[in-house]
Length: 440
Ligand SMILES: Nc1ncnc2c1ncn2[C@@H]1O[C@H](COP(=O)(O)OP(=O)(O)OP(=O)(O)O)[C@@H](O)[C@H]1O
Ligand SMILES: [Mg+2]
Figure 1: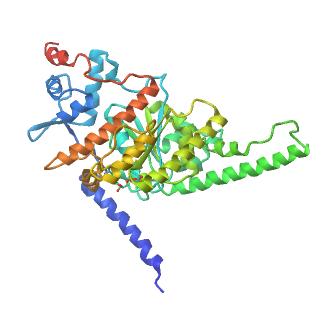
Figure 2: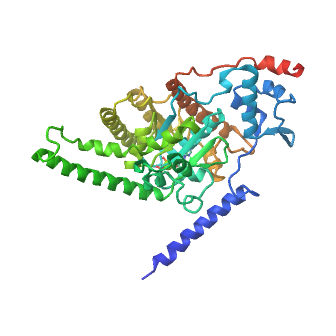
Figure 3: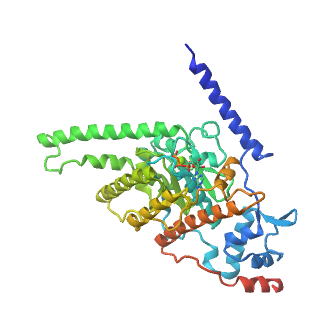
């Protein structure tokens, strides 16, 4: 008989070593993932201007100068943020200071679908980076023990994530029920910075399995205690005259963990994005309870659409119970987003049309294209925002335009919930600024 353990366990360790080497080689000389610099046209896109104006502006001595890379001038992401701040100082235009204002609540976007492989992690990671490029402070939360989002940030979920760096550790420490706990310290301990200056990460790994089990045990314990109390109430021993205990509340109360965690760290962020695991579990329920918006990615294929329909129904029921128990206005938005869409494939287009017909109220007008560009970038463990294509850019540009349109539409939902008007068109004063700053 073969001793599979002696084969498989060392094999897993070798896999982890190879994955680490790949990250180190791709980012040499650094041992961890590094963000590239951005050429002028991308800086302009991030600021929402035409490149010629930005080129003029960035020649001025009191703006960041970037550095020469071949014939191009490139800028670090930190320099882009500096330009934004400087523009705000000069114009007072609030669109250059996009961070959340005190009266606007933290946007919490849960990206969820029970259907595996629907593009949740992919969309979650691109959405986070798209919002970061707009100047927002983003917290990515990987709620899947597979650690896909974590991997996008150049970390191997099992070897590069220390104990205590996942949302699981917040649950296992039982911070919520510990009155002595320093909650801010406990929450911040689960968070790490990333190669994007304004994106932080709560990583995911197998610690989340333990946390899931811990929540289940807590719910069972609470249910046992509640049953004893209910028997005593019915027998008239104690609590006579009190209303019956609503057992459903117990589960929902246990789902307050994510909401409490985010309340503690909300001051540091504008948007939290939660990449959920493709299953119905307690951790996902806690994300749905904390969410202000839900994004449901779906592939326009028969089996995916069918599975997603039942997921939408269960989301609806979840929302109704949540509101019954906790009150409040509930989610600001729910969006169905077609991912990996191939408009040339007749069957997919037909499925998309069906979705348009029956899910018009929630279907996002834009889809993420199915594109080899995502694969090319992905092979280097890069998102489209991180990747720089070599050679023919057409496939890359099409894919980028589709992901930008999707992320932009979701950002509009977030802005709408904040009561902001979308920063459309040209921002005021740039042309003049580019022309007159030299004299200043
Ligand atoms: N728009 C796209 N074009 C091409 N490939 C894509 C696209 N979106 C996602 N993929 C690929 O599809 C696969 C699944 O994507 P992803 O990991 O985002 O799905 P998921 O829903 O998070 O999966 P899981 O249910 O396992 O968490 C990945 O290999 C990813 O690179
Ligand atoms: Mg995933």
